[in-house]
Length: 54
Image (spheres, one colour):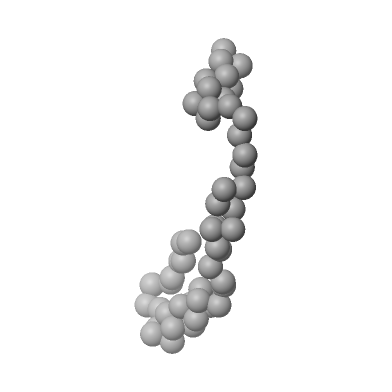
């Protein structure tokens, strides 16, 4: 995340920005762990996809 501050921003501006950033809940990526079930080797899939581009 990129936050742009104006030159000479006050401490109140920084505190307000930090509070706004902390309100957003963190994305829990653990819920996606183990979801994808593959029938072939991932490297073979990658090679096949790369060969299609040539």
